[in-house]
Length: 281
Image (cartoon, rainbow, N blue to C red; front, side):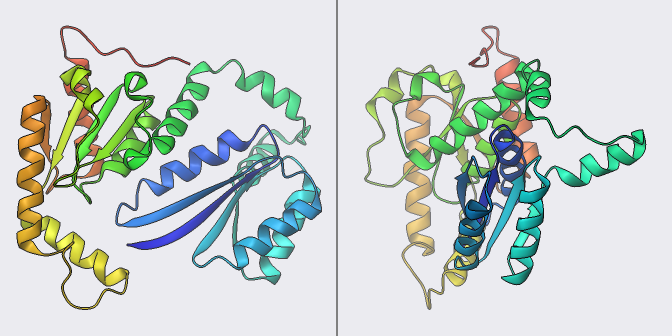
């Protein structure tokens, strides 16, 4: 799997803005693996220098930052240019455009912006949902099973992570769990209502194509167990039996876009006679 890194940098308040943008962008590239690096409270030139230097030494990386400080913005611009690092300002282009439209200068007040954002509960819930998805990606932890609105199951490369991020953007708290033949799933999963669990499957031919591409991106030469067709068929059979045992909804993602699969999942949940309530934090 081809890996890249995104440095999510902000002063204090604007971290949520940067994370929201990064998560949405990452969800559009499901064939790549991304390392998201959160760096809040960057309010000095020294910290900017540390961030840009680190990014310059990290292969295939970019910086997404947001700040109300002109000094911080200018420092990022100069250093990233000097060290040939891709650096995106998440806030300033829109700020500049609105300033021109209103013929007024922004007050650069974090406190004023905070008072506005505090009124938007949906915004903060969306960010909390995205943080939940990242923290519970690929079976990292099972402690939050009860808190999850949706639990995705599937073998490797069935779009579990991009789906989690996309659904999180729609305020659902999503956990995804990878299925491996011979590896037991957490027993707590059987006590979770089946309506909260969605199984993802895919045709063996399509999965083989995806995994062969992944092996190539990773520099794997020749065939591997990961992309071997017989191994794939066994994996999918194991996953299918497990998901049927749980009794969850199963969706074939072979020819579906992320948005289409997400729409099916949301429709499945919302039309229940006992609708699933979104988690509020």
